[in-house]
Image 1 (cartoon, rainbow, N blue to C red):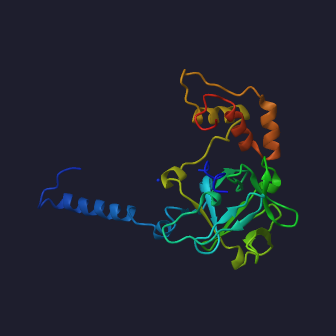
Image 2 (cartoon, rainbow, N blue to C red):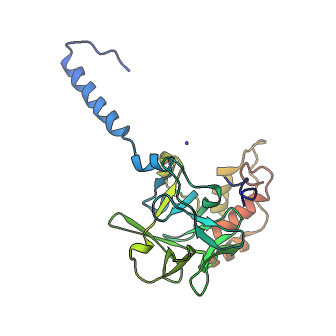
Image 3 (spheres, one colour):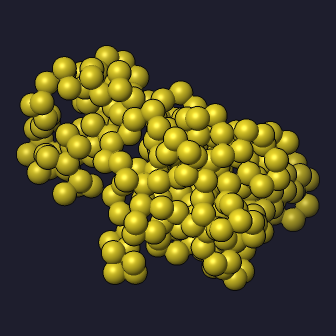
Length: 256
């Protein structure tokens, strides 16, 4: 498992006796103190901080149940809860997933094995899909400072008595409470993702502009046509299709 996850992927001079400036200095000092406040919870998790809004569920994501124990991918497409980590220790490679937006207030997760997390009809979380469909879409639920993850079957993700990851609970009890964690820059996470606004032609142009190097100053678009994008949007896997189309373009600096 370890080998397979090796590829998976933080002023002016102030004069004494100058009262107005002294007052201004105190104000600045207070602002700096507040801005430098340490997130102790994040420090205990090696910089992995709690996500509290849907816009932040993108890029590298870990799902924590209990204290510093994370959902871990198995090579058979199933998931378990990993062993607890110590303080200042983050998730292991097999416990890190890649998150993508998947519709209004929903997201998709891809494991290090390149498969999307979904749910079976009996409520077992599985990672065997190559694309995002309705069963691979998850919805975060935040209430009273607590987090839960709702499956497409309207049941909450949790860990059963055999340490298997399932989505079988209809109620948000203590067993479904988790933390969705991210390790990306918080400044980056505050930016609003707008690539999927506008018509589908504009959507693809926005994606290409974001990722291409433009070595020869020419914009390169995939020639797959707009029909493919329309179908993908209807099926709920537009983001994945855009990624696939970008992966075929040699000028793309992220997709090889």
